[in-house]
Image: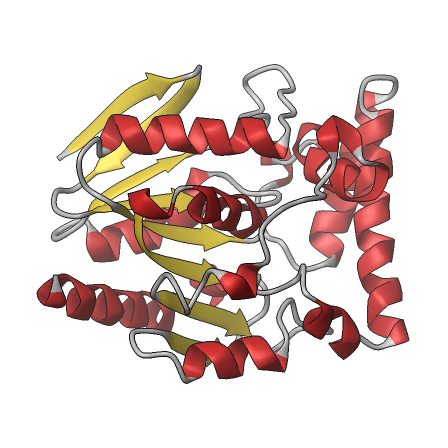
Length: 274
């Protein structure tokens, strides 16, 4: 069973029936990131997905602030599941925005599946990074932030910059589906655009202690997006799990069977305990 609806001008697709799972992708992806996950879950779960604002290249650029993103997610959750809490399934910037929504609306979230982005806004994470890793992170993120700035003036150049970086770091999303409009989170991070990223919740204070969390990370990357303390915290918290997969950042595409099997098992256990 599939249906499509519109919330604040965002197309929302719903597949399957059962407890609701709301899926947020990251850069430079689309709801298609979750195709295999939906196929694995939709017989028992109601899978909800949508393109982040500005990520549907058929539409004009639409950068939003953290507050506006959380308001959009809240509107979608309240529309698709007005009376029941939902599970969030998150990747990349979808993690960042989804974690913040969950921190603000813990009464609307039952549990969280986070993929490859953990406690990046904590001191434990920053202390873990070497100088080389910090330079690598700054390099690719500033490149994309600059491409965002160039977009309105030189969209062709900004698109080429964005697509080149996507290929360089291992993203296999078709080039035609990648555009500079997607880069505004990096402008928020480095230039303080659209209100910046200050004041968001400390991830390690919410997930695990207050919300059951299933966390995945890819082992085959030049640097991680989590601290060892984050893994230890989740690993020792009842109801939480950690899985490291032999993959890069896009682990749900590179190791779909392992990823979807672990997600399904964890969700099924939680559903039976409700």
